Image 1 (cartoon, rainbow, N blue to C red):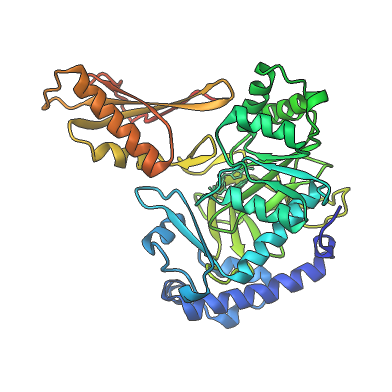
Image 2: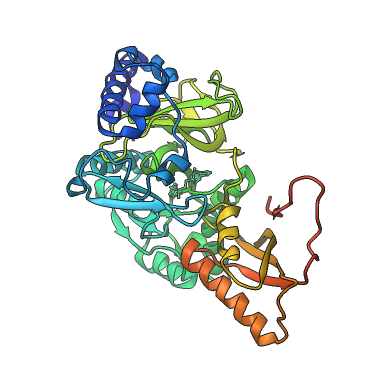
Length: 431
Ligand code: DLL
């Protein structure tokens, strides 16, 4: 099922559309944001130099730090009276990255999410159990609006409360599951424990899974244990949220909705554009966004682009599943975290050093985070209750500021092994 015929347009028509939209976007950011005007002027180019989509390589990159430097709304190109929604995701330290949407942007988002739901075969007969988190994270509401657009019934269950979710999925007869892949497996385990028979008690036929890196093995496992088609969804708040790309039933590659989001792959060290098929950092330009148009955004995600035709009839370029990150961002149970954010929380607590180590592992199907922090030499902490209070306070701050549950362990001064080169801050024991 293809939602919009543009998804199978000819390359020639697509390029024409992209060219028109790129010119409009560049004009918009140049005239409405001093940030882009300065960057474009510094490169010695003018709007006239952007004659076709291929000229995109002349434009400057945008980084997460640029959004941070203009926190919260500094890169918006419309007055706040036209912004009808705000979302956010983790920044590299204390403050989040904030994104905004006009009514038109929300229409674009709903449109691409409707394409995703159609790719997963959703009709108005379907019941979508949406276990992505609702709130500032784009997952919950993004998937919600797409399911509503194709007129399915949406169960807005959000994250957590695993046993209750399993019960609701069974009782309400959910046919499509939307969640992170790790949560899908976690729910399967809970269902097994509750003695539920998948084949008999559930009506699920497909799932829309994403927001975190996922190995081929894990995908197979989710698909097998639930007995459903696995559709992978990719996206990021800075570009729109979920709905930048999604896989159809014919392969693992994800169709990028490139009439709205223009992709390039670059060498993250040199910034040079790489040919199709080569792995590098994904860079995306929004072609239709109004509130927060973004030029050549460096996603930090490593992938490659494939242009071969797909049996489903869609012609837009496809990306392979994300294989890694160009920076040190970690994704813990779907939440993006930079070690620098954890460091920031630690540095604000008295009596501790910033010699710490983050250990990420698997507990069942979910991610578990242990943080070891050395106590400072200068401070006398002599009661167990004092140690407990410090631990609790850090755990509380991590949960409140970064939305992560961590097990904090305070350790003796100089007990974390030192390395000769860069400090080893992260030990990731997951697959
Ligand atoms: O994670 C949007 C989303 C919600 C996507 C629900 C899919 C489903 P952010 O919180 O801004 O937005 O995080 C974006 O998450 O740069 C990737 O590193 C990672 N990511 C998202 N989808 C995938 C995926 C949402 N399918 C960051 N595979 C991105 C691997 C993914 N990583």
